[in-house]
Image: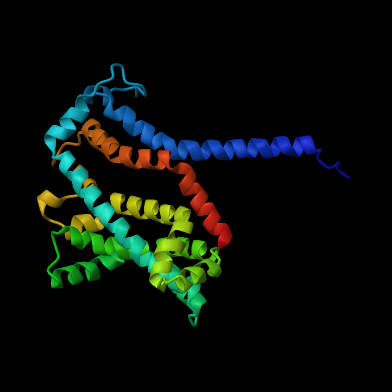
Length: 283
């Protein structure tokens, strides 16, 4: 018979396992971004040098200046910001109403509705591209911000609704009843009582919706051919030429696109993680 492992040995093995798993996550998550950052600080000559140099010999910001000169990067940033903010607000409004109806109203086949919401998010975006394009064209909305905002709202609804349903279910009904006794309508109780109490979930849904809209490429490329309304993911693809790929300049533009999201996540990391975990426990 083999002796059972001591608690100290089991803890050590578990600690090593967690350390290895954490290292894999860190490398997988941060190494690509770090590589892009270092590439943006290199010259074209240094980039193609062999053997590869990981750290630039002489740090240069010339690629960032060139990125702003070659393309209207600020305009792309502004367009992405407008579209992402509008899509986030629209997603929150619609998903809050849907989540409240699922969590509070006595709906038949409630579980079936939740299953349908989850299933609707599993369709690859490329399969929805043609119907969305035809719908926007028939409505005369192509080459406008609204052509991207409306699909983004629809695409964000499943995840935002599921997050908010979990939070709304954890709020006592007595608080809403008290508000309605004081004269609030059901919508007023939702806005004045439920949403503020579910602020962590609302915040989490907002971050997820914003990031999804900020990073989206396929619809932005297909539904908006107006150069003045190009978003950042589409604009970055224009740096490459027919026979050239200026990777340092492209990397600089990518860093410009990554920084706003990275700052947003870094500042509100605890709220996002807390919102996801609490929502999962409540659901």
